[in-house]
Image 1: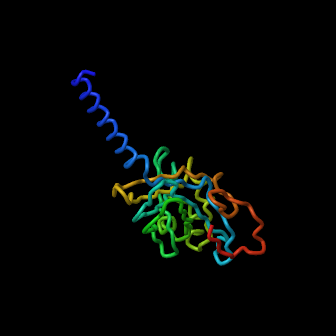
Image 2: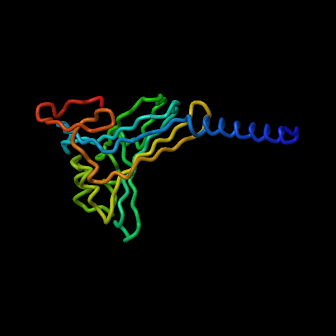
Image 3: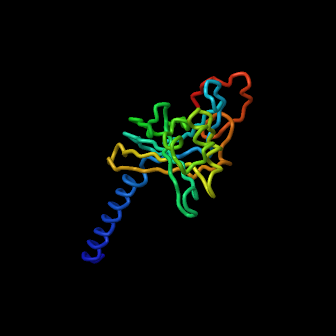
Amino acid sequence: MDPVLSNFLGIITGILSSLVTWWLLFHGLVPRIKFSEFISKLPLTENPSKFKYRFKFENVGPRALIDAQIQARLSIKGLQFENSWTVFKLTFNSSGEKKAEIPLISSKHNRVLRFYINSVQGIKESKLLPEEIRLKASNGSILLEDLLILGSSASMTGYVFGYDTFSGARKLFISKKYRINDIRIGRFKEMDIVPKDFSDDSSREDAG
């Protein structure tokens, strides 16, 4: 083979090999978050609303995600103007914390987080919302369904931010837009929701 052609092919092969390796390390073999298809709704006797809501996500990628922050936003269209959206950040504890922090989400590990809808100060105070909704939020009896039927369109979206343990690159993962029909009564089993009669254990917590 001609030496010039041989050298040229060697250079091209080296470049292609480097590109494939780079892609695998920084785009292929990376953390990947998969969200549950539905929101879990469970009875909760000590809550005036009588229910709690949770969603689940799993790191299905081969590498861990570190310093993860999780947020959830409720978006309602048409409260103020026909085509405008009003956004409320949902909270993850009774004190109104608008983000959850997880130091490490290892590969093949999952988390289940609960929304504290009645702790969202904006829902209690927003003049754009019907008075009935604000009152229910203030006394702790509002349901997620009450919010998802408002306006001309409404949805809830989950966000997971974090860093790839290998590259240090910041990653953002966004769930589907959960709507009222995406709420299911039951507990998580893996990434699915298993319906169950909770009449005898309505206040019991569940890890999944």
